[in-house]
Image (cartoon, rainbow, N blue to C red; front, side, top):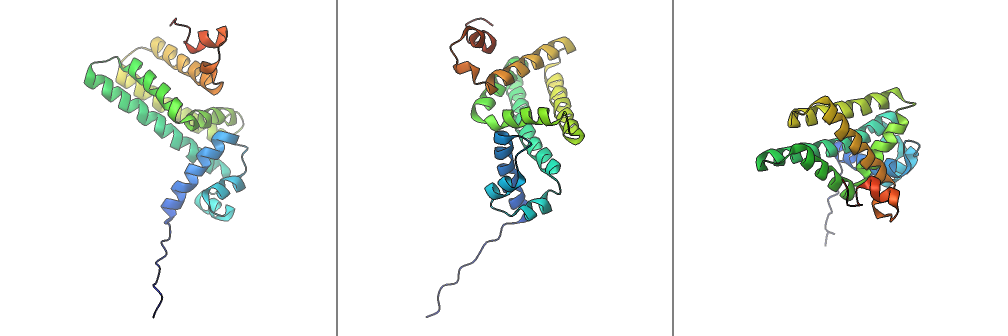
Length: 188
């Protein structure tokens, strides 16, 4: 009797690229730009040589990971604005709540963005990527809300405060400064 043949399914380069980006987002969120590419390759189940075939430099890989998390954030804002318009709600408020929910369920979005802001100080290509992300978010929020520069500045500044407070896990602290800055003191 002939043994049954098994068909081995090979991953396509695009599937490997997606798996690699998922691993890169997790590792960069945890370790920042200084994370070794060997760790990312191991998490993705590929060799470091194959990692560099898919992304020729560590900067390329980091930018792609940042774009992945930026796309999640952009999609969250766009969907929230669409929902706000459909329901006759204030888009800025709905987008703000949607962002807070995103940070709760996908902390990697926050951490990769914070690490990118740090890396931007020393790496011009990462700085350009972070600027692109901010520009696209600003343009989306401006287009969907129609508010002026002062209100946009205040909204984005509050979002940056939310990022800091979330990175510190401050909403779980029972301290006056944490309650006041995270908005859990009953005042807004």
